[in-house]
Length: 442
Image (tube, rainbow, N blue to C red; front, side, top):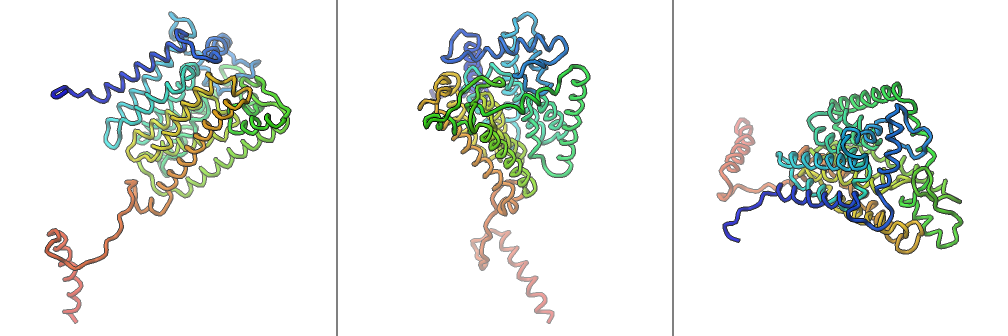
């Protein structure tokens, strides 16, 4: 309507966030029930049991499902800060609070020069695409730490290092945030601070709580989880007589049987190749644009997600958060990989929990879902790596300089004309005089 006042973009963002997060809370509080397994049992049963053990001053040494670094204890114990609520409700409230903090960070960053609010929209839309799982795991808390680290890291390398080191002791993967730090002082400061933070916290936990490193043994013995890329081999093989089974093993639903160790070893080999590619990229990269730090982190986490023996649904939260940070920077070229990640997140909601029974039984619906979801992640990974390489390594990127723009093509020289701007005529006359001066001297 003519004359109507335009509603600012941030208002729409906050309204959309409030609506979608209300739906998430209604899901995890079971006002509305999503078909499939109860995703909240991880909080109400597993996390709550760990909470009772951790509060006694020790880690869950007898539970092979405890596969997290020592600082994860802080996330599990955090509901104690809201003693007026029961454990499960307090956990959901704290996750929602972390969600709001991420939105606030992206909104603030998006209003600064060289940035935009597209990243905030990615966050608002991406989290609910995962369904209630987004609030029923502590991964959103870790993602909040990663988002803060990347947004602060461009100007404060030591803050990036401290948060990455702390995040690595929450769930390991935030150490990959350091991959894209600019060479020189930024890298030295960030990496040294991360090492100091992680080392200090590890020593504190080791001295204060027995069993702080027990998670390493439990992680080492994991197999191929049914949602991983390698699991597709066995999903298809089951239709051709493969004699294996699907069981709850080491806290996740995994394939057990012939050739599973071989596929698990192949996944680890692919992870090693991913590390090698990242190392090669760092050695070859010459151009850093404002978004390189987060673009590299996004590509790195994509690489280690698709090559993992486990692609649990909550892993998509990491990617949504990193994609949101990337798209906050105008110089980022990760729009298409981010869109593919959002599509994979939406498919994951159908894969787990809605049709998880089809995945476990390896029927056509479950296999198709996994092919689509994992295919989207592989495509996002390849595109992200290719765009990162082209922006930072290729000759065009080096000629473009720190602006991240493609270099201009040199124009052929031409005779001066009266249509040229005065500055061009002056430059031509000056150049001609400089050339003719030696001739007159001769």
